Image (cartoon, rainbow, N blue to C red; front, side, top):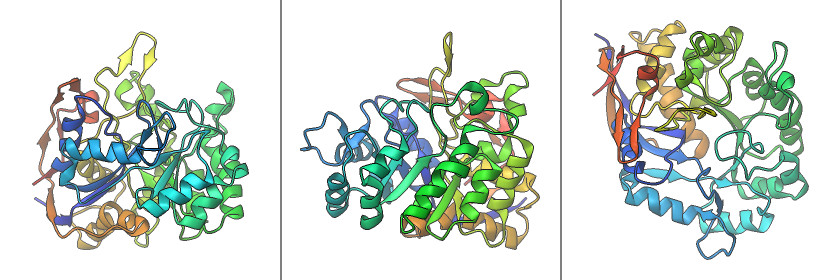
Length: 365
């Protein structure tokens, strides 16, 4: 049985929501060795301002941090809450937020592009208003949901192109070239095009990859319509998965790291549609280990354990300037039973269970 010790890691893209289920979602993160999180700001209302005394009608970073901490997040070493970029975001807000120490990242959502993205604006708006320039000047990381908005169905997801490919081949290169000092995280990338964009950019551009995008393709989603695999951006094709696996498992990987995009839904499928997001709380390192081995990076070898450690535990903190924790956990190739997460809001189905897998091959001690 293969076992190895890892420093606790940062999940640098996760949804902790709000309400009665929040304690369980935070506990699921802690149970899988998380030292900290980057908690998404697409709450209701969104986290669209920094300070409580700002008169704008949004939730604030200051308040959401307090809520996370009072629901068990005080056990984390660090928490980053990005500012949700809205029509009301200004360069002055970026500058004052950075000076306060509360603002470390800001999140771009394509308008209506995913869950609670109604307040998103076209990326060009933030260029024209010098918001991104202010972020560059103040060292604020731009976290992007990298899909072009406003496309027709055939343009959004087609055999020859997808919304993500349009974004990373036409939209974001212009931002990178115009603002060469802006730190950018291409979040939850799904395509070979996005991986190439990151690899061909400077050290200030990096990316997160989810467990599901390393493990599955759109064929797994569609064969039997396995709605627990439905997330945004959508799973893509085999050549895309191969490119993500190659990027994550490369011996010299410094630019790709863990961000699960874990998104709890007590009701995943409804009569009018399916909620976007896979819940991987409690099982993400185990799923990443499974994906690495399926990619040929077998974890009984010390050199491959080091590659895995770079992806899960080192690259993300290095990019965001976070300290590597001294506390550790053990990852073992030993089957783990999977059960629904019980919360005060209702049960949440972890991704493996939603795919009718009652056990997974790796476990945490």
